[in-house]
Image (cartoon, rainbow, N blue to C red):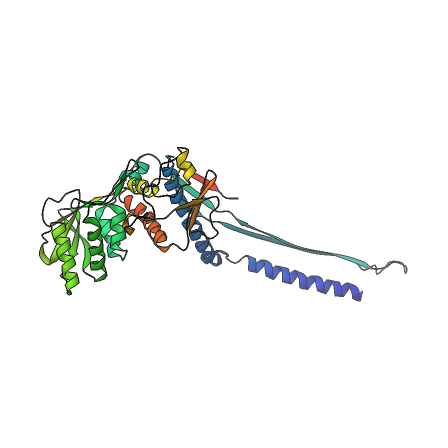
Amino acid sequence: MADFHRRSGRLRRAASFALAIAATGCSSIGPSTVSRDRTDYLSALASSWKEQTLSNVVHIRYGDTPAFIDVSSIVSSYVLSGDVSAGITVNSNTTSPANAVPWNTSVFGIGGSYHDRPTISYSPLVGDKFTKRLIRPIPPLGIFELIQAGNAADVVLQFTVRSLNGIRNQGTSGGVSVPADPLFYPLLDAFRRLQVAGRLSVRSEKRGGDEVGIFVISEGQTPQEQQDIKFVRDTLRLRTGKDGELVIVFGAHQRAGNELAVLSRSMGDILIDLAMDVEVPPEHVAEGRTVATVRTMSAANPRDRPMVRIRSGSMAPAGAFASIRYGNTSFWIDSNDYASKRTFTLLMIFTSLAETGITPQTPQLTLPVR
């Protein structure tokens, strides 16, 4: 009988402990997942965005079709359930014969389940949005706002601009490299020095219902700054308005002395230009799978070298900044190539600028992840 009481006590304590666990499980698990999920999803989205961009550059390099798919939404749901069971059956046999032994049985069980079922919505880029992302020129005001935000003026302008007031940048046409006008690279150098000196600024204002970009070159304080400002104004044939103001307009040539005419590139133009610099295996060129690389790292002028160095080989190195597989060849950007990483990141920002004013597309494909 004493053994029976000991077993009953242990059962009651176990049941109480199980109920306490169950009660704890009923509390909200959502808050504890936020920091982990946000970091994990951000990392996954950033990696997939880099890989998609690099994949499209390589596809274009081989005359293949680029394709885009956006992640429209991520809904992560968690289900936590549990159950506890306990029971006891006792037969004390108080009236049984002397040779009968009292007996008792006890039953105890605890169980639970946990489910993570995110739903990820994808929007394939087709039709009008696909066309506008690749063909629509990047808004000139957005280009100068990037410079205002601290991005290097020479890198941004070389990447996004065909010409400034008719002074042409280098480019690629039909797989053939078109050199920049002799004054374009010195312009980039002067813009960069003036940016570092804090002499460049940009703002937008409403004029007649339209948003107008105002670019300001403030007066220099040192001989170098004054020389750079004079060079920029003379080269671009600028007659600034009050306080050094210039109106930013889209076009190949200015119509007035206070205009800075920016002929900006589209994302398609930028991707094609970038694709022609990809380092491809020589046998791929010999076999006719692609054309020879337009700009190489051996060019005398650093500005005539690839702005993003994309390498190729049988296998990408571990820890590459971005890598993809195309056919039986790997293509990648080295993690220790800061200049290429910085410019490639800007490329993805340009993608967002090119979409300014485009109506968001509704999700077309939703896949539950099991």
